[in-house]
Image 1 (cartoon, helix red, strand yellow):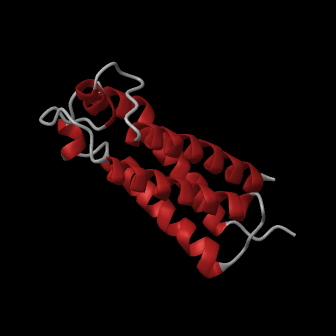
Image 2 (tube, helix red, strand yellow):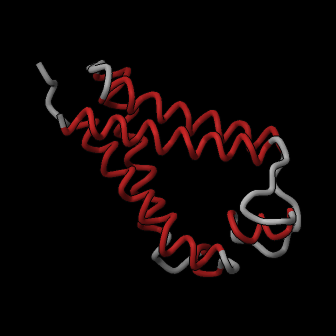
Image 3 (tube, helix red, strand yellow):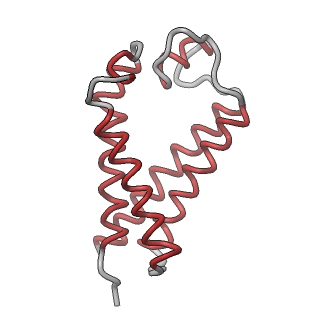
Amino acid sequence: MLTALAGWFVFIVLSLIAGLHAYWGAGGLWPTASEADLVKTVIGISHSPTMPASATTFAVAALIFAAACFGFGRGVLGFDSLIFSRIPLAVIALVMLARGIYAYMPGPFSRASEPFATLNAIYFSPLVLVLGLACAWLALAPAET
């Protein structure tokens, strides 16, 4: 039951995030009114008024959606393969947990522009940490019979 819940959570949240990245890759500006404001809000840099190239943003969206699919496969469909589900989920969990923790340490995140810095501390990084824990659960949970 918990594994299925974690699988649905990972799939839904990461799919929404992937969709948002695809929207930005296509030129969307939500939740801001200008590209410069979008950069400050979702990337946290003020020295560039433009978003990354569309191809880069679409690649990020595809990778995020792939991570969502690993969560769905293991948690919802019950696909239990060491090489094709558990190890990828463990890698995804490690990346997310590292990103979530690193955001609260001195470094690039501590020099991020506003409003990204506040949004990251309150929303983005905690969500990434929860997703990382859910992926870790999916990677390590016993197979359900």
